[in-house]
Image (cartoon, rainbow over all chains, first blue to last red; front, side, top):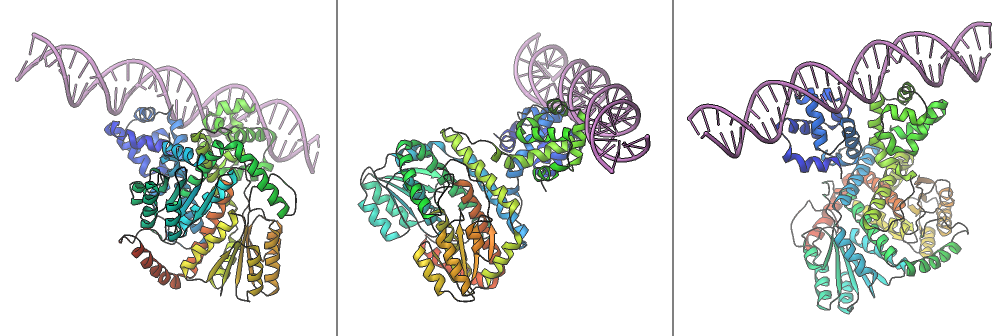
Length: 288
Length: 288
DNA sequence: AACTTATCAAGAAAATAATTTGCAGGGATC
DNA sequence: GATCCCTGCAAATTATTTTCTTGATAAGTT
């Protein structure tokens, strides 16, 4: 667990003096990581021992331990509190995107629902046939990505971003099949319909979407992905990164679940790719 | 600038004793951030003052300043040196993937070639027509992603993952057009051929690929993306994240470059999407 | 209602530990 | 052989933690 979560959680248990310290840490993080215990104490109008006690209460060994914990979390964890820059300078834009992407990873990691993931992995690994659905550019990329990752494991999968096809496929799917649907917004009405159709036929339905959304309610297993998207409509970065990472995790776990089958297929695919390139090395990653 | 770059750069200027300290810091980072100056000194078989001087040489105020700098960089920056875990426990797998993804972002950010990016952005923004090429699952995703991002800006773009089509399109392209080709491996021979064909017709060629690779050599503008991929072939995480982030940066910068044209198009697309969903909100990101 | 007691927060001062500085010896280089 | 730089020692400084004490609040008792 990281300091920032702990700080949020334990906020209630803190005394008045300790709360003042917490405020300073949260609001002026830069100061906090650089300050000595005396400086921090002075600013919070408490005595140094109180600061030590504050650190201990948060589960740290000592004040310096606290600072280290703080520094390592905060690099990734704090900035999402900060307003994004409005600059169009390349360095700023890059900084902004990278930061948001890292925050997204940080947030996904923290909020991963392993129970749901394991349930999804179990279903995927034993599926007769898998249908990956998603529409609208972003989610269709996720569907393709699922196909790209899972067919390599020897699984039978097809991806579709076409609403009409999705409905027909959902209707054609049989018990033992799995439908994985992705929706960033959670409000893809056609996907909801496809899920409903599938569930009538006892087809397993897995949704990658926002908690509590229409799509989430329509699916049997929900792997929730909840990322606050920034307001800049030019940059759907965070959510996409979060989805990609989640798919990566799912696919990796499925790989472990189907391992014996998978290695054979991978080797065959790899051989195919190598002849397509100018020969050689085996370490090169699978696919271009 | 972060400590780790500095450490790498200044490595040559360090004395023997200081090098020993550097070794420990790099190889056993966990120890280094938690150790006191005395512990670190003992382990490196030097005296505490030498450690202080080492920190100063790296541009830090003091030893504790050094530790803070270290902690804040290293959370993201060091782990790619570490062997990845072989565990198949979901929490470990997730941790591993998230860490690798964060490292990838860290590394891309550090190695971004802004000159190349700006050159690419300038060409893309004024292109008559854009062709996005990529094959093999990963790169084809990048090509689709480019299309997905750039068409929203009112640019004319098509993506293709079909080698045959790519060659024909390259042949059909005219001066004023731009071809953007992506290749993770840098050894997609067909893409090289498409670039060659395009350059004969004075079509601008932009490659997203590894520095020094065949694809890189074939293109006029190279936006280099160099990420060491792990050895676990089930997990092409890092590179993909790096490419996505780079495309995000490119697309955002193009958005700024073509702004007036773009907002109109975005508004039209958005209206279209909203009727497709169950009404409402404008803050929702563009596309699902 | 008044007093006692327990509990806890918080600061003062002392003790401890960590860090830095000044200085001097040793080795390498020119 | 002189100079320069690295390095460690020891002292000085500074920072941090521990211990002890005080004061406040709340619950229980007479």
